[in-house]
Amino acid sequence: MGEMIFRNYFNKIYKKTRIDFYKELEEDLVNENRKFIITANPETIMRAEFEEPDLKNAFFSEKSCVIADGVGVLKGAKILEIDIPETILGVSTCEELFKMCDRNNKSIFLFGAKSDVLAKLVARIKRDYKNVNIVGAVDGYVDDKNKVFDEIENKKPDVVLVALGIPMQERLIFNNLDRFNKGIFVGVGGSFDVLSGDKKGAPEFFKKTNLEWLYRITREPKRLKRFFKYNVRYWKLVKKEK
Ligand code: UDP
Image (tube, rainbow, N blue to C red; front, side, top):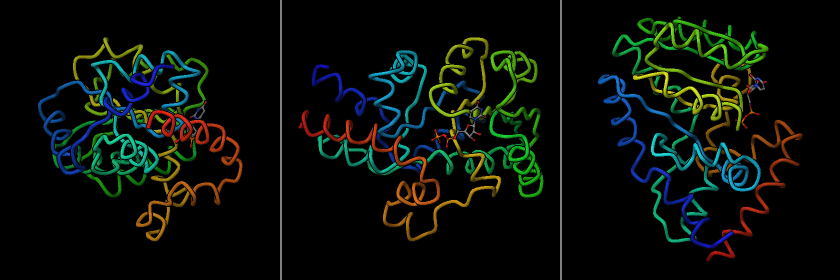
């Protein structure tokens, strides 16, 4: 892999602040612009580069907007002297979208996670965001995931959150994107598990010290292997390029 190529991942990532991003996002929502958001962490980048050409295509597509979903991306960028001011987490982006939909009476389609998790999330949105119109909620364990997009196309939601994990969520969104002329599409990974209250989000201490990833590993030790696999390689590449 050429050095410039790796740097390009960071060049593609959104470089303004959270406030700017959410302001632009609400404008896109209100103006019914189509938008595809990819949340990137070191694992996303490593899998795009070495394992998932579809994910790489989606990442570098001019149709996608990539946000820094974790401190690993921020620090990697900093080492390469690329300025990304702060993280914009997937979970926070979901929560902001709920608020925006509530403020603007917009509709939302939820796709992914286990059915009990999804039911809890639907109940929470109905309770906390009364003006949000949930036009569909399909769990992530249906056989034909592509077919769910027929339903999404029929409903024409303003926001579509896909919580299937990488790279499945990005592949599905990217393959189906051209069927839509509006909609904010976001691949949100395990966010529904957190937002439903099923899995606890990291306590303030971990968030403030940027150790959310560590908290996640302590809660789910099976993540450790995956974490090492991608992160060791990531930091090697960052240092090599530096
Ligand atoms: N998931 C799903 N269908 C599948 C596989 C996974 O709905 O066939 C869901 C799973 O329940 C979880 C999410 O996708 O809510 C993936 O979460 P994970 O934390 O692994 O993703 P990450 O945030 O690390 O990308």
